[in-house]
Length: 75
Ligand code: SF4
Image (cartoon, rainbow, N blue to C red):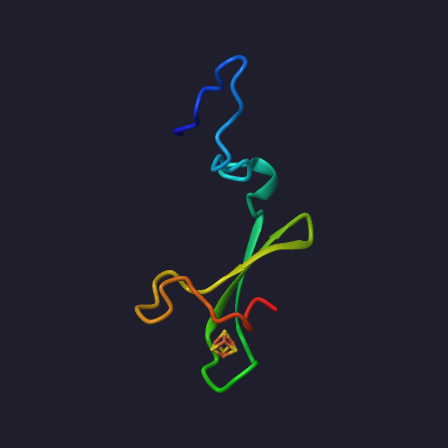
């Protein structure tokens, strides 16, 4: 993990991502489903932790989606 080492007396870089590699945001269940919003029916990966949805992503292995969704999908 490439975390910057804070220097005493200097502010942390604003680009530091506090959520990266956070155990609190690691899913304990990933459900495969599809978006029903339009006729594209994109594949969805619904990431859940302790029964709550923490992230919704597209299918990484899909050559068109490449893990992405339009703005409506995650809504
Ligand atoms: S993610 Fe967007 S493009 Fe894909 S099915 Fe849902 S609404 Fe349609």
